Length: 262
Image (tube, rainbow, N blue to C red; front, top):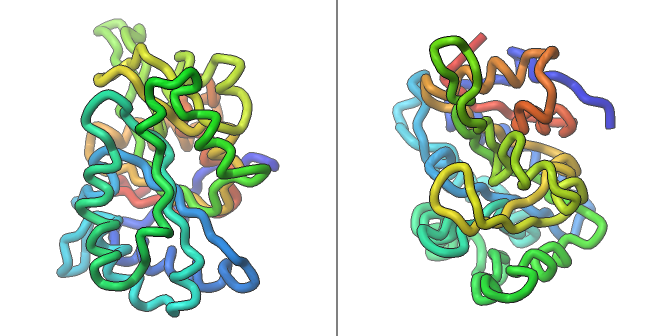
């Protein structure tokens, strides 16, 4: 698929507007489908409220999406399958926050069922594959239909501008790190790594090639410290190897939620 840079028109500054756009997309896309796979990222990004929020409801993206889920028909909601794009295997599991703040409330409201949640098999964390093989097999030859992703922070530089440590991560994929440079990371699937550029160690992530197969990405870039990442992502001179967030250029449809409006 040809790459296409993020444009200012891709960017919205209100979670309600972004969630409404996703629901409309799902309503159209799900027609004729038996399953629509939605990938959820971990961390705080899905729950962050942009400074540009214009609506009275001060909600992060996933809580706003939760409020809008009821506008989808029961048939469409029944097709949704929720999977995770990155997980921490040893502690602070991403699944915990995603369940507490989004999935459990959706189940309790009768909007989805537990059978529609297919999270990482943590019981396989100590196996030879660390669960990457088993979880990757769920996808077959297809990827996510939708991925909801946050971003890391810019690379840390010294006073001369030299990079001291790399970041610009998306999911659990970091620049100039085995999560993007190993042979396994260059194929669609999931990879495990123990030495993480940010704690905790012991992580798994969807690879950039798997993310690139998505049909729609909701990219969440909220907070002043992350504005530079969005600027780099929009810079045609910056390469994917230096900024993994640029994988979104390979996804044909995008909703960019940010309080950095250009």
